[in-house]
Every structure is written in structure tokens, then in C-alpha cells.
Image (cartoon, rainbow over all chains, first blue to last red; front, side, top):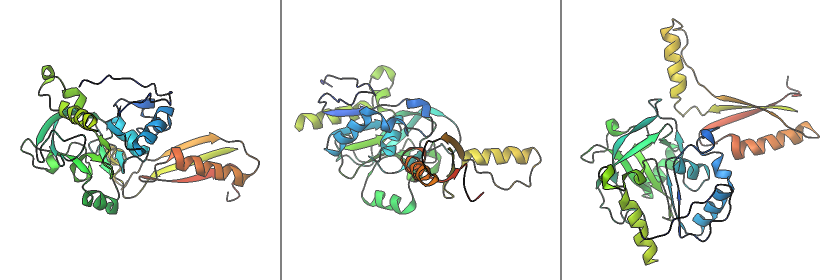
Length: 207
Length: 84
């Protein structure tokens, strides 16, 4: 991407003047209590919350998405998969917006293929809040079939409205269950995921 | 003082774990079991001068960490609870 990358230790509250933050997947604190519930109080996360509030780009992937919802940086919660299984497979996503710093290199309606690997990916929001989220156009990715149809069969985990990724109202914090970083090298299959990081890089160069 | 926090999933939240346990019970012949919901019990030992003070603290940290109010409800029980 042409940008240096730093890893920030979770106990460090110092983000060291980064221009974007990626909160990666994993099983922070063993997923104890609830996925992401304890990590959101890590010193690094308190700094990430401030960084996001000030307009900095924040991408949360998988457990990172769960942490961002627990921290209140994104609405909703990720419940246990409806099928009660840890799911690790390739899925298709339909891109719903390309006017975000994370998706500018994609087309609306484009179908991308990247993997999911999670036990709690069932996106939930109470009905009124869900309507508000949809009305505000905050859904960026939905699970779909290979032709881009959003169907119950293409929903791997029971997420409401097939929601796989959402953005905050301000448009600088995105959370998604699928793993774009696992599809960044053609050696690992079609590198659809890299377009998210390229979009972010474009945005950072422009701003 | 002993504090127990009972955490339950809100009624609107699907509980695939409870449903799976119910199916197992049905398969075992307990077909009189019509519903299973699985929550969690968190037991703590909290220092405090009065019951009210401990209860207030417990409510505060339950809301902040132990419970996600979007999906769960909770009840706090104290060992010296006058209701018992």
C-alpha cells in the first residue's frame, strides 16, 4: 500500500500518530463474557475510540467488528451464529456503497468473494434501530449468492437483512465480519479483499 | 458481600444454544420440555459499607461490562437480600 505499518500493543494507550487503525480479528481475551466485551476496555481501544471520534479511519474485522460494537463505535451486536457452528468458508458479498473511504475502488452491486471465520457473526439490532440503520444507508456489505442475490440461503449466520458490514453515520468507522486481509494476494485466490485497503490508501493520500 | 448477577437473553433474541438443548431433551424423551433459554450466572465478592452501596456498584459495573443491554437483561441478588 506504500504506508508503513505499526502494531500497537493492547496495553499501550499511545497510537503513535497513525493515520488509520485496523482492529483485526482473533479471539481477544478468549471471547470470555461476550466477544469483544473485555477488549473494548483495553487502553489501546480507548485511544482508538478517541481517534474514531476525531474522524480517523477505523476498520474492524471479525473480532475487531465485535469490539467496535461493544465500544459503541458502531451500532448493534454480533450474536452467536444461528447454526451454532463456527463457520470458516468463502462467501460472497454484495457491495452496497462505494462512496466510503473503504469501498471507493468497488462498484455498487459488485460481488466480491472473501472468507468468514467466526462463531458470533449474527448481526442484530432491535427492529426500529435496524430500520434507521437501513434508512441512513449504513449497510456497506451484505451476504449474497454468486450472482449478487441477497437470499436466506446465502446468509451464513442468521444476520438480520444479510448484514455483513456496516459503517457509522460519519462514514469513518467500518466493521465487517468477513476477512478482506485474507484475500490480498493472488496466491491465495482472487484478491478481492485488497481493494478495501487500496481504497483506504487512496483516501489517505487525498486527505 | 456475595453478589450474584443473573444474565438473561432478552426474549426477542434467538437462543440457538437453548434450542439445541431443548431438542436433545426431546430426543431423550423429555418431550414435556417446551422451551429452554440459557443465560449465565456471575458470582462476585464485593466490599462495601452498606447493601445499598454494594448494589449500586454492582448495577454500575454490570451495565458497563457484564451485560450488553442490547441483547441481555440482568438481576442482581445480594447475600443479605432482605427479600429472602
